[in-house]
Amino acid sequence: MTPQEYVEEVLSLVERIPEGHVMSYGAIADALADASGRNSARQVGTIMARHGGGVPWHRVVNSSGRMPPGHEQEARERLLSEGVPLKGEHVDMARASWRP
DNA sequence: GCTATGACTGGAA
DNA sequence: TTTCCAGCCATAG
Image 1 (cartoon, rainbow, N blue to C red):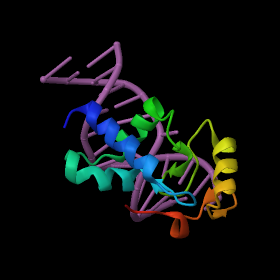
Image 2: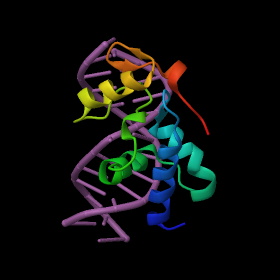
Image 3: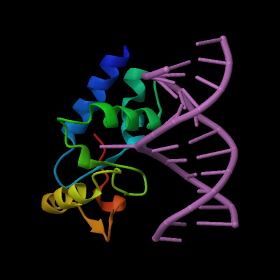
């Protein structure tokens, strides 16, 4: 699998996250580990930073439920409007986490 | 080929 | 609660 194809897989998976749910970078890496052979949460983060435009990036958070840097305000608003359970300034991962 | 870097992670302080 | 650390691995220079 080429790097470009891996990017496509990551983005298409993010697009498949239903409203009201989120996935962590590590969860995405795990979900694609079979097809890609890769398993690096860091890489997923890098991909979102570079190619995150055009997909619901606010549904992707780190394993602690923290928002991505630089867009915390916007992410929080969007998550709230979609019904994602929040605990203060971070996502309630126990309820919101989703697996394909 | 090697080093630095990073939208990460889980655990420790 | 936040910060720090070691492990992690593709990408950039």
